Figure 1 (cartoon, rainbow, N blue to C red):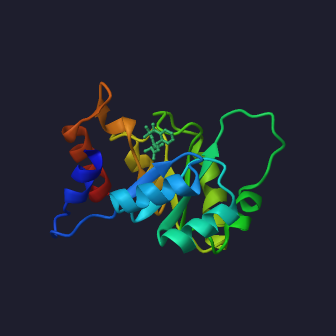
Figure 2: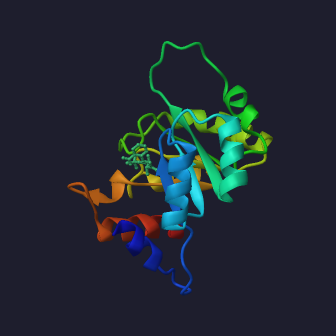
Figure 3: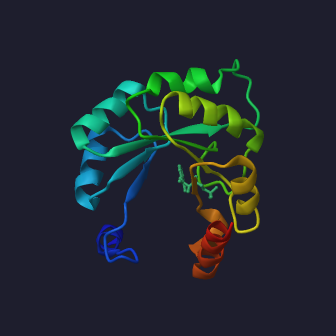
Length: 178
Ligand SMILES: O=C(O)c1ccccc1NCC(=O)[C@H](O)[C@H](O)COP(=O)(O)O
């Protein structure tokens, strides 16, 4: 039912909008099924998908790949720079999205890391998108101060777990007005 509803969506110009599917460590077969059933244009990969996996998805399914890199507030892992993390994905992804670990948490990470990821995304020739805890009251600060190429919001435009059209309109207005 959601797939059918998505297929009927039209943008202001009457054209179907770009559709993005969100996945966490899905198999190639699961992605193939979702892309063909829902007619996805983009797969947004939130798991530990390798560069080789991303390359195969792009080549075999003909979709754009947005690879998500999770920002963990506290970790005991040895530090790895954004450049080291992103470099292996050069040529096999179409955008980098940085998001608070877990996805859909409604929690923002420390935006000071954005500059490092911006440079690393530039180095591999893809745009940088930012997600995690955005809402109508903080999106202007993000856009003005950190200039991402795109943004992604979920819980910040919801009320009691459901998308709230008034919050969506307010969020979009804040983005357009700046
Ligand atoms: O939304 C989820 O429940 C989710 C779960 C697991 C992985 C990713 C998930 N969402 C992906 C998104 O693109 C969200 O829009 C993004 O994480 C921002 O969410 P929020 O912090 O709620 O704005």
